[in-house]
Image (cartoon, rainbow, N blue to C red):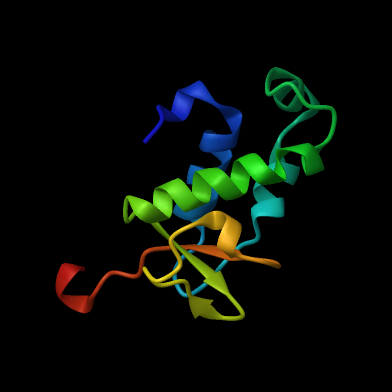
Amino acid sequence: MADPDSSPVVKHLLMFLENRQPPKTFCPSEVARALSSDELQSEGVQEWRQLMPRVRRLAWEMRANGELEVLQRGEVIGDTVVSLDDLKGPIRIRRVQKEMADA
């Protein structure tokens, strides 16, 4: 995964993952909206909506690495969905739920 210090988007996504305990989820827009105007400018955008494809893509990559779960309609997206382009509509993100034995 990218260095957390390299991008405000990565930094904020990791912060949300750290602060939301499963089964709590969050919307990618929460990550984008958390960026300050200076951070938005450093990402080359004017407003948070322009970051949505980037946040969704980052979440999808982290999902592929087992770092988080992506949900749609309350269900975890399984391995049968292989492309972010296959997802239509809103998604939610959450930290991977660890088994009790891992705790």
